[in-house]
Image (cartoon, rainbow, N blue to C red; front, top):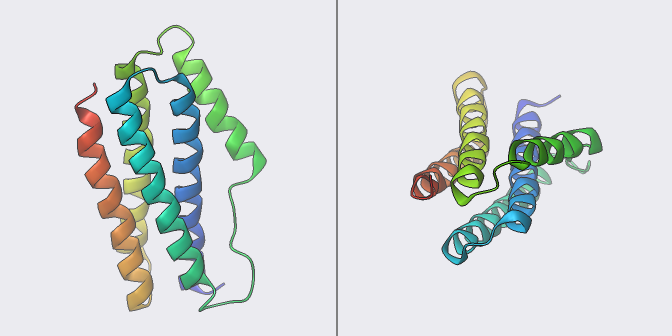
Length: 142
């Protein structure tokens, strides 16, 4: 498989997981300012996912790989398990920070260990920077 396609698949999966997690956390949230941040973060993930999909089709006519049902279920289970006794804003922010950190780490690994075209490299950097920006904003809610 072409490295560019592989990187774009991984970035899209990261966006999908972020979107999924935010949607789950929004259902548990009761604080207006935190909700505004999550909705903004969600919108950025959706926009970036679309950019990734558009770029993907410059490399192949195949459909981009999506997160499978088992991964979605694991995300749901993890959030439900971790918030059963504590669904405070601090706990929700903690969960979002942990997930965002995982996305940053995976993005950095792609940048550091994969040879990719300039456009793919640029969108990978955009993915990381977007998550780093929201990571800082999430810390306020701990």
